[in-house]
Image (cartoon, rainbow, N blue to C red; front, side):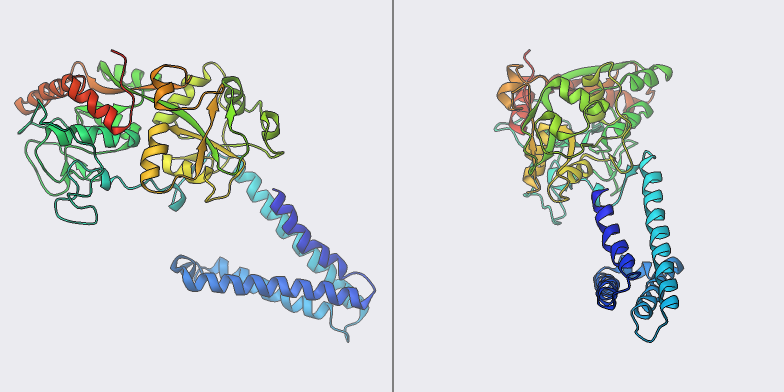
Length: 450
């Protein structure tokens, strides 16, 4: 909003100057306006030359109309400072220019106010998730950009005590947990092209190049795949009450096997001088009771509290923290469908120094660090930093247990479905064995205190 008022001042003040009687003032103000218009047109042309998307936009009637409008304004500005023009004509043109500018600025402000009143889920380039190809169980066996030896998945130092040759349990889950259950698959599954972006395997055997038994459809998608029988085990940070009720309405009983711990963390831009919050301050920020950073020791700037959609793992974790406190309805473009998008909104790459968001420690410190993207800082909570040590001893207050979720009463009737279900139970037993716990720790998570 501050930027909007500054831009408005640069436009309106020179226009008002055109009404003054002193010719030198009129010429200066008119010259400033002409420079601004020409600069915008040249800048837009330069950008359009480099970005095909904007080139395509140039073909739209609305954009051409905007360019024509700028041209008309440019001509009128020249007329307003042209010496032979009569005083009455000059003033008439100046008044018209001011009225046009006010209408244009009011329209922009109105559209922005309307957008801010809506709940939108941001999409597009700013909301892109990091690539999971580097965490494939066996890398790209076809030798692509992420070859078989390029995988970042952790491995055991010895042969796994469990090995599947067929009837592979179909795995799915949250983005932040993919490197972990990909490591489980690497240890126990036969080598294969388990691309996480392929469709989940839905029938016995390898049915084609675009099917995988180890996918990643994020929390909500994975949960629906579990209910539909398209996945045997889904790895989630938690299950919401709505998801439990949905399963119950389908006549399905969920079984949650805890397999590890991670910290639910709050992140701010690296330029924000705030280094920590209390639990109460977190709740007040996300309920809207605290709206300015100076209330928690920061700069005099409004807080932009970014969120994730309902049913996402991190949003479920936030709801658990908030308890009975209502969560503030976010403004336009403050809800991101992926954790990568939320990170981009908070990071100093976007220069949103008044933003706050949330994620999980492993995702921020390991997955984003691997991608050399981490440009945020994790806040201390009640003076305790989120580390493996503070998670293990319970001193960090926002510890989050994550689970391997299965259906206790699956409806599979074929022999293959029953065999998959049996192997899914064997895999969960192995995950909770010393070897499975070792992989949890090697991947970067914290083991449960069994």
